[in-house]
Image (cartoon, rainbow, N blue to C red; front, side, top):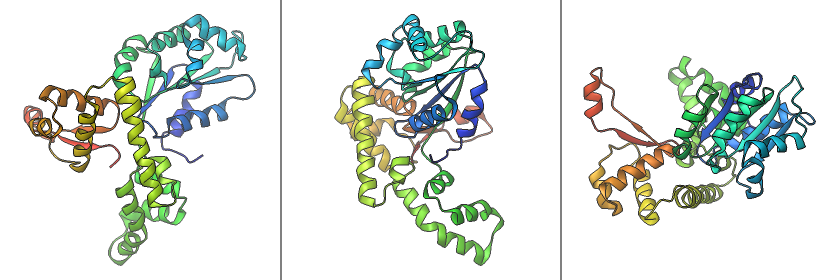
Length: 301
C-alpha cells in the first residue's frame, strides 16, 4: 500500500477507545486506508469490515442489537480485554448509524470503531450531536505533491524536494528540471490516487471523468437529491475553469441558469462534500475580512 501522511496518526488511534472518523471526497483513498488498517490490526477473529455501499450490509447495522449480534457472529466477545475492531466504510449511507455507533461506544467497552464518510453535509449535525466527546475526526484530501512523489516511488525526487529550501542558484535549477515533469503532471491531472497511478494521459483523463460522473450520480443525485443536475454540472465546470477566482454569485447565477439562492446552496454542497474550499482574504481587521469577497479553490488543484 502507498502511504499517506495521516496513516501514522490513524494507526496510533488503535489504542484509543474514541471513534475514529475519516471524512473526505470520493476516491481520495479512504477505503484503501481503512482496509490497510484492518489488515494491520486484525488477526484472526478480532475485527470486522463492513462496506455500507453494499446494500446487504444494511440489515447488519440497522439497529444496535443487530450490529451487536453481527459482532458476536464474527468473533466478538465481551470478556476479551483487547479491542475488537469495527470498520464502517461510507457510514453516511445509513441515517441512524451515528446513534448506533454511540450505543456501541457506550455499551461495548472493548469495541474500537473506525468509520469513513464521503459527504459531511448530511452527517455533520448527526455526528456533532450523537458522538459529542466520543470521536476524533481526520480529513483526507487528494494527494499533496510529496505524497504524489511517494506514489511515483522516485526516491531521488523525494530527496531533492526535501532539500529544496536549502538550495539556490544552479543547484536549484537542477532540482527544478528534475521535478518539473512531475509538477506539470500534478498541476494538470491532480492528486486523486487512481489518477496518479495511471500510465498514460488518456487513462488519467478517463479516470477523472469517471470520478466526476460518480460524484454527480452518487452524491448530487442519489444522496443529496440535488435538483437541476445539468445546471449544477455547468456550475461546477465553470468554477473549475475559474479556479482561484473571487466568488461572484450573481454572475454564477446567470451562467448556470440557477437562481441566486440555489447557487449559494450548491456551492455549500460542493464545499461540504470536499470538492472545493472557500478562502477569505486575510486582514488583521476581522470586520474587513468578513465583508471582502472570498475566493474559491478546488481541493484537487
